[in-house]
Image (cartoon, rainbow, N blue to C red; front, side, top):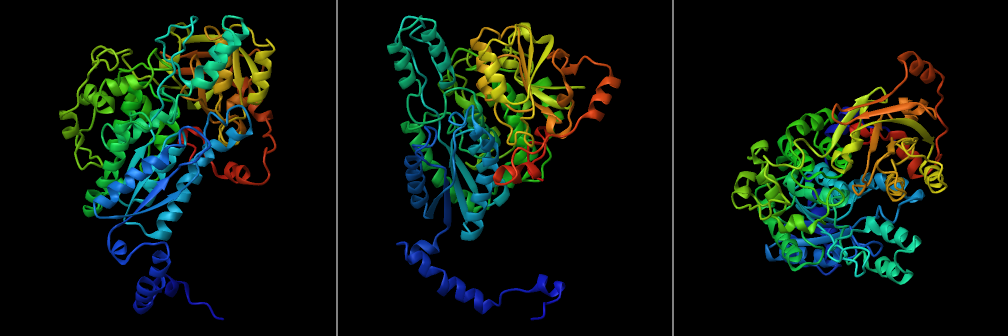
Length: 568
């Protein structure tokens, strides 16, 4: 059979009578067969992307939120069509091979939603998600598909208060602090019975961990970008208010569809700058530096590390919650939520950006109230005069590295110490428990970047172990991997270029002196340039860890952390 010339192929269209048959004869029976009516098909078709599953507390309750979303869609005269996608938990993936798959799930989630939206030709969408890579994934999907879309997140569970004597009964605990109870039991400070109470009780119900980890940080970013209704993000998982906002989110699609308000009209460059300032003001997760550029990339908006650094210089940190302070995340909701944070720093924001509610940020902030000035500080009385996250650069990280200044002890703002090298996370964990890391040493875990890991695993477990072993006031932890938002201490991540691509981290040897200077935003290897060049010339890339499957594919196409670990 002869092929049509390429120029004719480009112009070729399905004849109109065939289109009419498809629309009116072929497709409708498939939808009627599911119980939908002719009237249903005349209304706007709204897809509901739901990351519900029974495998983690962040997502186990999302079907109930989806029910309310459906009610809102139907009450607004539209027809809901719900489907699911994956939603793994970073906590359950900690410390084993599963963590390699967590960052790649962001791309899988975005692609799976894109497929369903394109195949089913929705008029609009509501996306539901809760946890670390899931919320960025649905935001990437919303940007890529670019039809009217709103997001409702799954909230968080309330913190745990320990009913024993060793801790203050009013102290609020999040899941990442379970190690405190474990070590207290091991030291004989609490009986096993009380440890078991904490083990069974520290996750108090459905929702994300109640702290400014990546999950809650990215839920805040949904509001800050304008993709979620004001006040909807910082609500407990199955609270009455969360369910009310789920219904309102479904109803909001009517305005968005009728006025063709797409994500590209909401998530503008100005909206991303607002979101970055909110991230800095609340001392949010370092993973925000990965996800915001990746979401912006879907809209052809370039967000570089230098922009984060520039905005950090003029954005004060006005919130200090766990793991950067004593209170859990519900305190921020009680103090006025993200609108109150944005009101406090309103002089720094672009106020004419729009929200899925149809209102501008200027209109939203008119009614916002700061109800607790110790939780949300005034801009002229901050916890820190600059942002809670800092970009470091130097000969160890020429393209940048990230440190959470908000979670670093002040005595560690300037650090100098000898390197202790580990080629992967498990090796570091084993050596820490065996007492082979000494006070003052700089623990380096390399070949854990997006390509080298592959998958850029979290180094949260080694970070927590350093704290629990009493090394947090003297030891640094540096990696081309990333961290959970729960990490505390001098933890430098996202070192770029990563070791697997021949970055300087690859040629550091045990005993080499590492210097970190947070006030001056530098990170360096104390060696002459000639020695660094000599070592780099002798370096050989390691064999890929995976030769087939998802991670083999991912490692071929993923870019570095400073570019958001997007796919080429």
